[in-house]
Image (cartoon, rainbow, N blue to C red; front, side):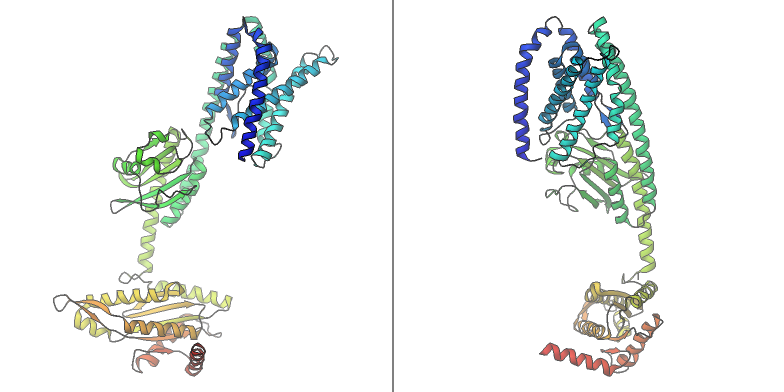
Length: 578
């Protein structure tokens, strides 16, 4: 809603209010004398009705229309308008509207001014009509109730669709429930009027007790229904978490589901690593430059880390002063430890801009979810560790040949479908045995690790690097022809030859030295007639031994028609030098 519209609402509301109070002073004041207690009891009853809204099936209803009608029948239009406006004010106070939504006061007030005037107008119109005796009492009252509901609903629809720009249907499930509750308005109003005329303001006390009792029972029922529904969702989330196999995926799924379960503008999941809290996954509805993701942990979360106990804040004023710059705009916060086998595994922090948003039921549910999350993260970590151990070389942290071969077969099948070329580079370190014999096997291991990093840096995202065995490495290049594969291999060969490998001479008191090494490299590229992807590795191996090792080492050899490739290389170099 634009600022100009909000200003207009306030201006219109002030005009309505001034005229109303002028009319109230002139026409309603005389009715107050002698009826102070009765009128006061009506206002108290209206406040109680506003304090206890009815919640059902996700919809909320404040039932004070029956009080509006009773006030109208007992004391006239102006008193009814005053009672209705008072009930509205109490409702808005209970809803805790902030500065941004303060426009709702004039907006709703104007809406009920119009509703009251329309309902009273229809009532007086119906009274003036010549109706059958059997209907002369019922028809005006029914017309009042129907007009009140219809005008109220039309105004709400127009406000949502035209002013607030929230597209809604004219008739939805909420409308149906609203009509269902409206069936209570007329009988409740008539009962209240009859009781007032018989026993006076004592009727308010009797009605209030009954109303509060029914409201509390419905509230308890609603909470139990909500709890059952949330427990069902919690159980479903627990099942989903147990089926995830990556830590990041687990945390992301958890946050995604938490957004649907709890009010939240900020959600952070921390894990404990090496005795410190580390942010695993975070969600921010609004950008927050003060809170640096992955680097800063607020002192309140740190306190939960130390105490291993839940902390809940319902208002920003309850936070420690330095933390009021954290979670910008938030008021309510839940910070819950993730504990497994009496050991703290992490922290969950949830915050929302609204005050008093989290109750004991929410804390209980998030503690249950924290247990689920802790188990799921442990399982995911165990799976990731096991998978890594089965797929990776423990020394170089490159893929082992078994996982490389699996990927090679998958990529080969894909390349056939996509009609792409697939290239394999096989690399063998020249004269590697003398390194072990001269400097020790640990020096040889250092060389292998440094070679692995050099190859990864060179290949990057363009391919997959794996350890073939011993001092041999293999590279898979997707969507790469023989010329590009050759150029990539030649670049790698030059980098290796120019690189200084830093090692410790374990056979000479651990002296730190630098050595130069070279590599022999073989390249093979898939052929349209090739049917066995693993044979690509054999072809690259053959090219490496016959074309590189046997011809002097420190060179790149390509399997197949070398003359054709040489022509391509010459043509490329000629193009680049022009």
